[in-house]
Length: 192
Image (cartoon, rainbow, N blue to C red; front, top):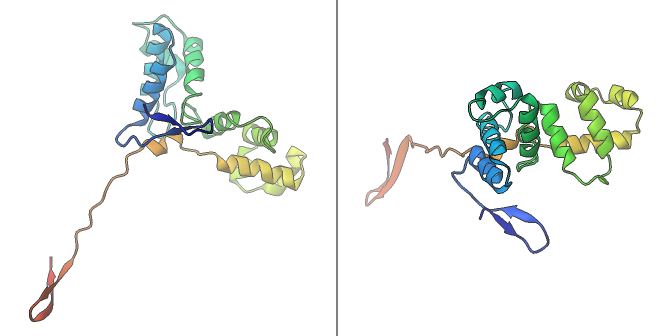
């Protein structure tokens, strides 16, 4: 299996070179033991998730896509999407950067310092974070500098492209311009 126990109660992902994000999500969908209709909707959702981990189609469009096989509407697709959004990697299936970060924050321990401020920050003030308007942000959130720093640290710890870890690393070979060889007469440099 792609998961292994580490003895201290945590699960770690083993190296699965060549496995795409869609493969990883499909495996988790199969392991979720959902009804057949939900599996069909889940496959359509996974097909609509791009390599960065974002959902690229609306739930209404996906409902139309599966209409031949399943009677559902946007709300039914939304219910299956909520399940997929709990899959690994955290933040997958989001429709925006804000939603992606919210999904990642939702997986943290509720007792994490600064978590509530981070949620408020993402829900209402993400534009101010992007513009580095920290003093204005502190005034609008009515929090101390320390609370704001904790919230910002949590937001910055989130990955805005959760699917990036599954993108294959392309090997680029370097073609040398010259070769240096040792000969009985000494070193010889030749153009490639």
